[in-house]
Image 1 (cartoon, one colour):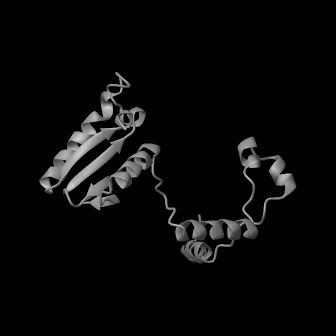
Image 2 (cartoon, rainbow, N blue to C red):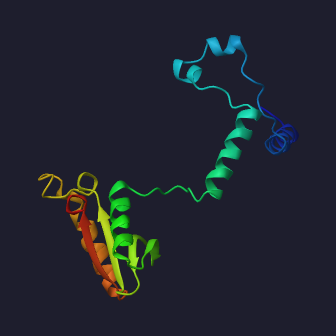
Image 3 (cartoon, rainbow, N blue to C red):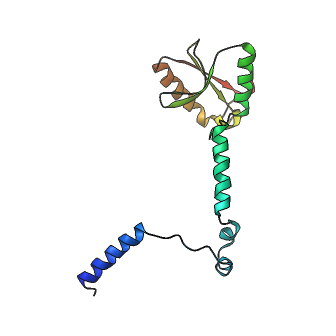
Length: 156
């Protein structure tokens, strides 16, 4: 059995080790041979790789490319809005929802839904599981004072 002093030193040492923990040394070739095939495929991230990745992330942010990218149906619909000369806002946060398009002149929210992803009953008869999502969104938007319509990909 360990004495109380020994236990106290172990606890203090563990806390100090957690604060001053050093990174493990780079994996050697001998250690890599003992790894699983999945671990072998993953190359180590070097300082140079991390620098290149950071520069790429900064470039994406500067160019306005974030985690969200427009879907093809949204791009098609946006082209149609521009051709019609309508004023619109894209990817607008309303309450807790992020809507595809908002037309302030008409106080109208337009959701563009892909047939496969959102389960269009015309294109995918067994895909109606996600149809209730829009009904809930529409009722929430109407409570907030917005009109909402859904346009399916095949309607574009």
